[in-house]
Length: 86
Image 1 (cartoon, helix red, strand yellow):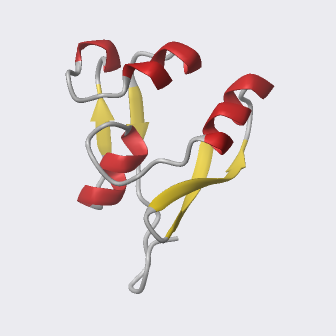
Image 2: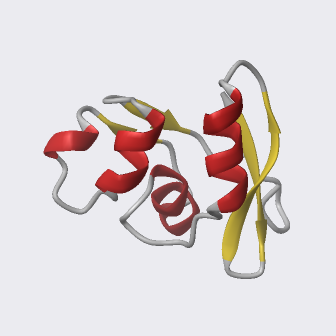
């Protein structure tokens, strides 16, 4: 599990728990821009919970990240307050 923070135009790694070092390094080195290519990008763009049942079957998903991180199904939930995103 990881928590990202939106800074300007991308979501950056803020905190994590559990992932192997190479996964943490990949996420830290590749901030996610809003858009349909990543879970964080979709959550930031749509400002709602997003579930991707199978990332490999999703034609808009960035499959490079999926292959490196090794997941199929993902869930993202925005942490919001009345003002800007957390």
